[in-house]
Length: 252
Image 1: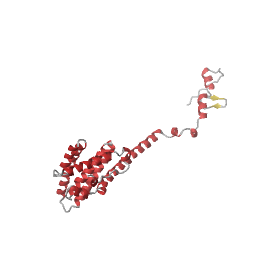
Image 2: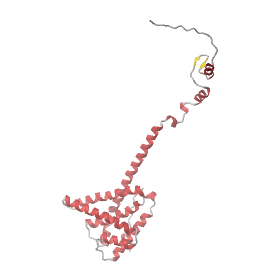
Image 3: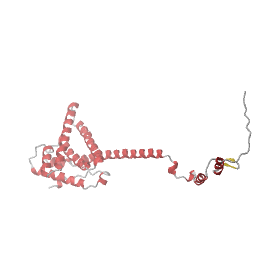
Image 4: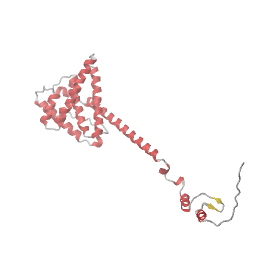
C-alpha cells in the first residue's frame, strides 16, 4: 500500500537565499539556467578552444616524454659517432704512416713485433690528445685501442698456422707490455727529454739502441707530433680525423 502525502503550496516572500540565486543568474525568467556567475560567464565568452595556445592544449607529460626520447637519441647518436671516429683514427695509422721509414731509419727488423711497437707509439700519441677532452675523449680512446687489438688479431692470423693457445699467450703478453708502455710514455711526455728518452729506449728500442742520434730523433718526433695535436682546437677535433703524421725523414 502506497502512502501519498499531499503538500499545499502557498505564496511566501522571497528569502535572502533565493534572492542571491536569482542575482547570480542561476535562475532566469525562462527557467533554470547554468550556474555561472557574471564574472565567470564573461571569462568563458572571451576564451575559445581554437584561440587557446597550443601548449595549453597539448599535454605536458607527452612533450616531456618526447623531449627525453629526443635527448636520449642524441646521446646514442653522439656515442656512435665517437665510436666511428675512434676506428677511423686508428685506420689512419696504418694507412697514412710510412712504416718502412721507421724500419730503415732506426734499423728495426721488419717483423710483427716491430710493426706493433710503431703502431703502439702512434696510438699513444692520439690518446694523449683525446685524454684532454674529458669523458667524451675517453670514448674515442676506448675505440682506438679496441680497433688496434682487432687489427692485431687479424694480422696475427696472417702469420701462419700458429696454435691458438700460443697465439693467445703472445697477444696477452704484448697487451701487458702495452699497458706498461703507456705509463712510461705518459711519465716521459710530462717530464724533461731525458725521461722521455729513457721511456723510448726501454720500450721502442727494447734496450738495444746504441745510437744516441736515433734516440734524439725519436724524442724530437714525439715532441713535434704532440705539439701539432695540441694546437687543434676542441671544437674541430671531433669532426674529422687529426691523424696527420710528421715526416720522420724531415727531422734532422
